Image (cartoon, rainbow, N blue to C red):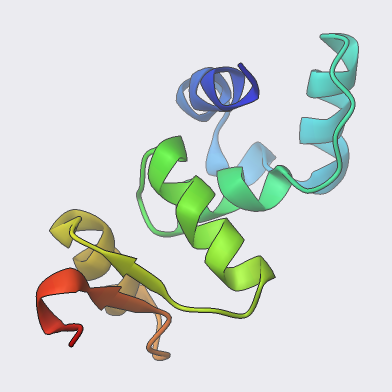
Length: 94
């Protein structure tokens, strides 16, 4: 449910309006209390991803791991904006 709400927010709130206090206030006013989901939404904007793509990327970053994905759009978007190798295409993993 939270990810559905974040997906709606991504379509309603501009990237410039995204900051911890603003998003937390919006969620709090909806009766939702959370602390880490802001990174999901920030990733969705920064890398031009869906919220669902941002979920996996945020988890990989949080645990200081790498994301192995078959999603070429996610891979290309991340690699075009980041110099690290935090995302690997499944076909190159082996």
